[in-house]
Length: 65
Image (cartoon, rainbow, N blue to C red; front, side):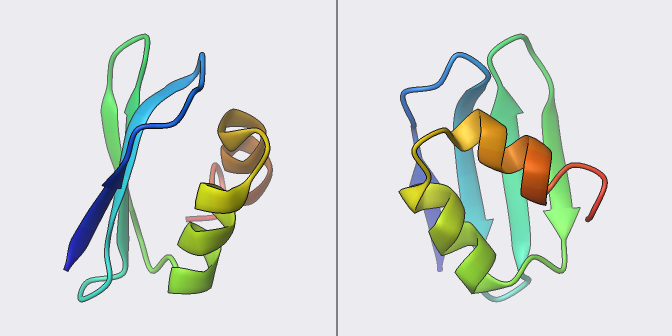
């Protein structure tokens, strides 16, 4: 099942996670949609709960998946 989140972020317009394929898809405010494979569900949950989704993305997703 895929879940889509629309955070209050100046960097990320929305992000979604497909638990069957472990794919995180991120849509950026300035354009561009990127998919990241092999993302564990707990990482997605942490991103949902982060105080700053953009900072979480930069520290935990970008360059790691």
